[in-house]
Amino acid sequence: MSRQQIFTGEEYSRRLREVKHRMDAAGLDLVVCQDPANMNWLTGYDGWSFYVPQCVLVHVDEDLPIWFGRAQDRKSALMTTGLPEANVVAFSEHLVQNPDGHPYDELADLIRSRGWAGARIGVEMDAHYYTARCHAHLAAGLPDAAFSNNRDLVNWARLVKSEPELTLMRQAGRICTHAMSRAVERMRPGVPQNAVIAELYHAQIMGVDGMGGDYAAICPLMPVGEGTATPHLTWNDDPLPDSGLAILEIAGVRSRYHVALTRTVHFGKPPQRYQDIARVIVDAVDAGLEKARSGHVAEEIEAAWQAELRRNGLKKESRVGYPIGLAYPPDWGERTASLRPGDRTELEPGMCFHMMAGVWLEDFGLAISESFVVTDTGGEKLCAAPRQLIVVD
Image 1 (cartoon, helix red, strand yellow):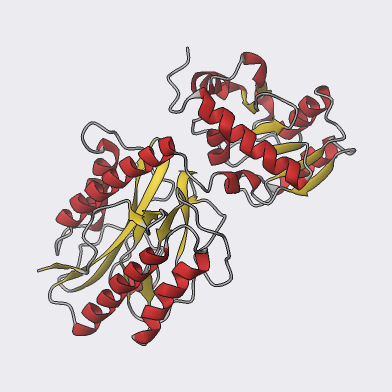
Image 2: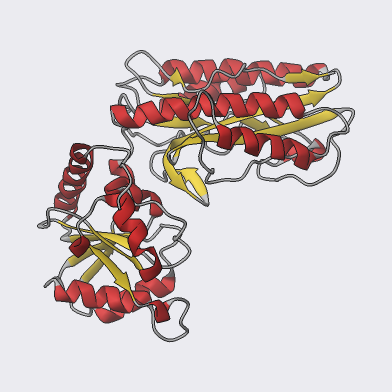
């Protein structure tokens, strides 16, 4: 009944040991992980079920995690996790979107049945799907427990990628490079924006060299013209212009592991100002990649990037990067370290970041990003797309 897991049992055991070590340090007996990426990372669970309450429980004294989710999804858990049936627990179907009862009422029952009613419980206060109602029902059902924010404890355990994870990241980078190339080939004046995105989706999912792609945690972003002054616009069915800018931000995904990339296209001959800004962005990324080595800290990458911008009269107020890896909608970032001033996270080989290198001004913007792996000698680029302002004549 099970399908082959992506990682070995020893890989999952290593992850569980790391999480328990962090739990001991934080004074926690039990963590409730509702972030679907954390659920996957701990157990291998995969399925489009995160729109309903679900979670993985990790207790410091238990050998294996417990999956808790919708009854309809129980077989998905058995197929994807390799957990024994006793560790795959479903809540009653009538609790799905019930105005009165809630799945976490039964989660509280489960926790009490295991003898953990008075446990020190860490929950994911910032997880996208851990709602206020989830927390209210869980806390009401466990009045003797001591609840606290676990401060993204599992997310931090994911920060340094193992070699099997890096293999998937490099494969995702190849898919991303291919998808970006196909999309740019389709970007010509008069071509409807949605036609470009359709080509992009096809390339993302077909993958390269027999390596199929997966759906991305963020849809393609493609601001055009004045829209390039802001980074998070999507597409419509308007034709691409005869002259002006368009930015495309995408990811290649392999078995839920994401590598992101942004490129800027100019239709027709670009003004010299645009060419100059693009050159500064490229040089600034090179400066950041040189600092992306073990022994440095996260803010040093941003400082190197920012210094190059300031030398040329530019600046970027927002952070320049964030960790990437295993992800589900609505975001491919890991919500831990940031490449920004004040972040003293020490860089270690195997950390993966998206250096979101862009400059957004009042009426236009340019972005030419890079995803990379921290190594002992600097940032290893995960994509092979040319880093330049792309001119479409």
